[in-house]
View 1 (tube, rainbow, N blue to C red):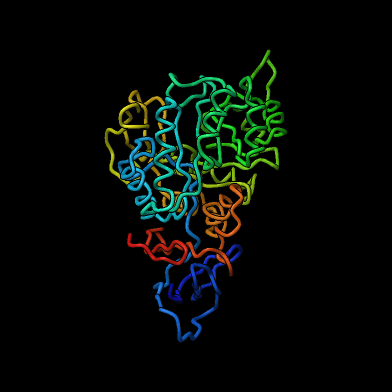
View 2 (tube, rainbow, N blue to C red):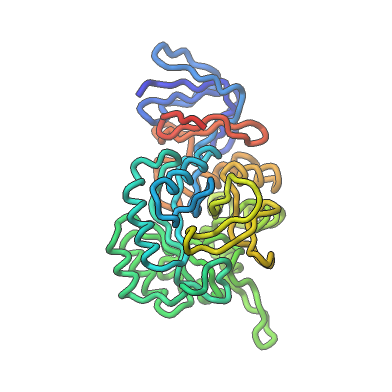
Length: 390
């Protein structure tokens, strides 16, 4: 792979922006970062045109994009979603399931195995299972037909089918959930709190069993409530208060208003907050009718006002966000500095998943890179130094 010199860029580092800077890429990794343009006789030169140069975005939670969902269970749908996310700046993603039949889940696992080494778009970091062990009251758009409590005879069978599961979401207050969390931790899989009626004390108990992350924070989880007249702290308050817990937020400006996005970052800090799309098939597409979940077993939704809604319009049914929209919303809408925004879009997700060579512009890190303009319109994308057409 030829050496590349990307110059005339606003290089976004952890704590500052290096205007007019350059990044040297060699053998798929960052070889150096320079102020100005170094003289290199053996590198292909790429003029960034004064645009921002950042690490590629990492999406911990996405169900699809580009008219396709991962639960559609085909190679082409899986690759179509990966291509659409790449066009919007995401270089690494974690394909995410919904509560479904086990047959659909196993089909998804089989397709992942076929595609994971050649996605045709954003790279895959592992399987993210969302459900089916959720609280009915906080199910959101999850199909209630498939909700149940975790049972070892079921989840052990699923775990034995693939080594690619890296995260599993559940409601920790359900019977058997804490033992399941222990099993996931033994296997190096992240248990995450989601779709839950948990109160503060439930989260404390779950944390002791490895639940160190919260799925789409604020969405489908209990906040403070009254019990016999007394106010009690819920899952949301535990997420804010417990330093060891990381959060992910759907930063589309719809699921959480920009004022609250700003508040989450102010309280937790960018090192504990990851930006996610939680996108369904309509991400990157237009408004109108769509489906969340597989084409055969999914639920009808309507996309309008920049979000997917259930047909009665009484609740959201997943987002249609892409990586560039997350960055734009946090930076331009919520007023979070670009350095912190990029940290939440790249470095923090990498650290949550234990990835040590992505998410930062530093020597020795993978050359997963993105350039974009002041409106966060994506210009160029690289994965491990390979430039992709978008």
